[in-house]
Length: 216
Length: 147
Image 1 (cartoon, rainbow over the protein chains, first blue to last red):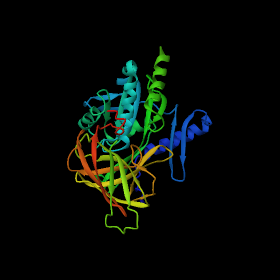
Image 2 (cartoon, rainbow over the protein chains, first blue to last red; image 1 turned 60 degrees about the vertical axis):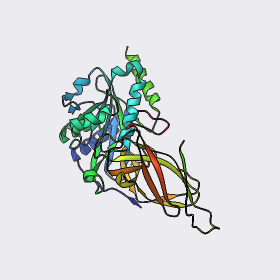
Image 3 (cartoon, rainbow over the protein chains, first blue to last red; image 1 turned 30 degrees about the horizontal axis):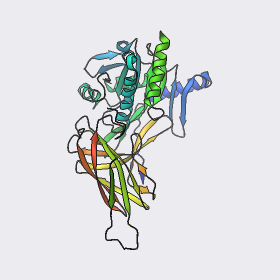
Image 4 (cartoon, chains in turn green, purple; image 1 turned 90 degrees about the vertical axis):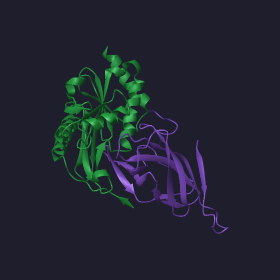
């Protein structure tokens, strides 16, 4: 009785880059540097998350309409999640989790920039993002851009998403996307990745505080 | 804890035990923007083998039962379930990040503090209507509301 949703293959470029990255990692690092390398047979769907690959590099528009790049967040740790505002379950769940991590950081919260990047920039314009992020946390930053800009950001973070056509969805489509929260260091380098279902927010907050305190 | 017991099939043959569905902790998230789908969660238990066939609410044009499937790469996909088999005595829990009711074509924004009726249609137990309170947009459940 399950209807598997048909998938449209977009972002072939991103996928090729992910493939190339995954291959390079697996060959060169022999798995040691590979933090998370997943193979999902038999479809050509491979996603690799490795320290060498992932970087916070983007040129996007924040929810106030201002053009921003990674430089605007330099010197701060970043918590980054890719999602979309038409997503009723995973995205609010993950964002609620992310902002509770933020609140649990206490005095260190100011050292962390929480970023929500939409994978659905056509619908998630800056005003839409403004209304959405403000419902979660006054400090949550919403990022959108052109489809190309968002694809590039996703590629740099080595995250993955795609548009799924579905008749019953609003506007006839929904976005499939990864549920990871990235922790990037103050130089924009990858530090860790978390998923909401894996541990309570207290555990993530503790990990982050540990890192911030180690810096001093 | 809000406990709603719906006793159904009043006209059933006296020798047959009544099909009973117990629904606990229904809740929904406030919707932030207009024309966005809403989401509702609840837990239910049946005293016999049954099948959830349909869910309806006057606030939504359509209510769809969705399951989140996550592949090896951590990519989440929503899978539409047309029906759900229910085993006797085993609670079925709809919760953030897994099974959920997606409320499509909302007639109005769901605001925190309000509530709305939701009717579940079971193959043998029939209809069960519950009142669903609306919690915050980032709520994680009636007990552990974060925001």
